[in-house]
Image: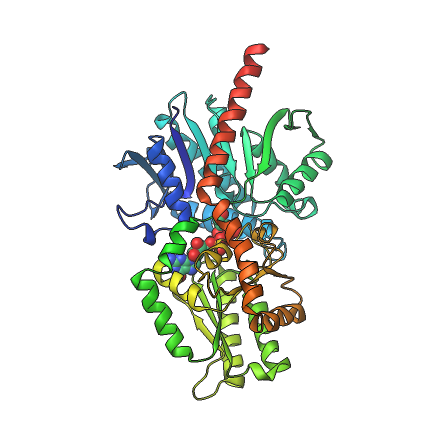
Length: 468
Ligand code: GDG
């Protein structure tokens, strides 16, 4: 059996026993690495003065963990620069925020080359390589340039933008060409796949071959949608763990008879938080009976705190929450509980279960795992209502949610009003459909589908080479 090599910007090894500390994705990837005697390669999280190409190696549970550092220049220009200030906003349709610097573009390719050089000595001929996300698109192209022919797959966790948006990126062609060095590209949704296809056909002068491969830049690649899932069983169980029960009870006690709307997001301008606060404010204005009847708990974990746009969004939200609370709060009721910290996963599971409504309204999101976690954590006897943005990848699977356009404040208010008053029977019916999807299409299913498909397409490639 071939080994699995996972390459991602950050390596996130779950603790020896405590699954609850790590996210479902890290646990699922790690489980596969254990099964296939694998290697996890990525950035150590350290920024140092002198970077060595040779990776640091550690072993844990039969998994080889290989990490490399970044220099200060790499961190500024590759990580904060091209990855998080160019590709991230642009792939989320925020051309207004996407900054482009040729020097950052160069650094992006340079760091990818160094990752490839760090990984290369660890590779064996029949390894299967799976690269993750927008930080590392050129990784396979670098490895191919060095003569490595192993099967290589790439999964994009964020949306693939419409061609007209992608064209605003001066080096769009180099980025898409780099994708063609893989054997298989995985997108979150069919819509992302469609945008990729449009680019290949109409911008790269490529074609779709009869066997489904995409051909362009003198190369071919398979591509498909592999919607990522969560470890639903684990999240359902976690919602009844002692820590979850404690948080559930504490929150219910603090609310009395009132209802709670929950939002959990990394503090990021793609998550639609100012628009969410504005919609909640409008709910209190248009339907005053909701005052003193409902609160919004917004947990927003700080991320990328040294990118200026992230500082701006933090300030904007603090001031919006302060203004709305100043206008509507009473001595024993605060409309918005805005919390800038992160909670252990078990606590989060309890808070999900204690909330009657989840308001998940990103302006764009590759998938959105919080929507799925909320569903998994509900009490089947008395489930809450999920309100979900149509621009989250998850909306393409979770259509039994109340699907909203986050730019349409009135529509969000109507959905909130509907959720506040939804009878138990309808809540159960909707939740059952959502839960079935979340459990069936879980993270192991996503992982195994991708790895299996990568195996298949690379076997086809070998056959084609032998036949020629
Ligand atoms: C990217 C794509 C795609 C949040 N606060 C806390 C906490 N979290 C956890 C959530 C969830 C994860 O972080 C966030 O995942 P999302 O999917 O919502 O969003 P991104 O971070 O933007 O992830 C996204 C994903 O990759 C996977 O492909 O779905 O579209 O943007 O698991 O629970 N976890 C803990 N405490 C917190 O306070 N422990």
